[in-house]
Image (cartoon, rainbow, N blue to C red):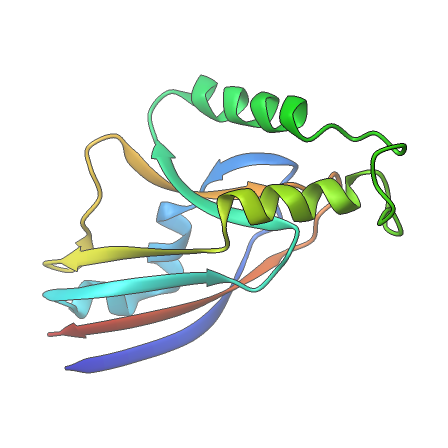
Length: 141
């Protein structure tokens, strides 16, 4: 059993839902050495989140962004915690709703995702910088 752990920095993204599956695979080539295992992805932030969802039709990502904006509106009368702007508390709420970690099986050197599944970085900030992610892989070569 091998244990691989590293922290990667994701390229900065604009606000919205972004497929990052290929970016992770490029930054963690060790995935290709695992025949059977699991991969834990843990985002080291409180104003973004992770999800697995549709990877083919970009309108899904737009609809997700629109849904969360309607569900958690940027209204200064609703929140006390707005030190970093109107998106401050709303980003924390969205992050808590979706979560900052996911676990994915690895089979024969690749993520075992469904045909239409991709890993999303859900960026909730209007002006975000790069995001860090701790990746832990347990598996056999």
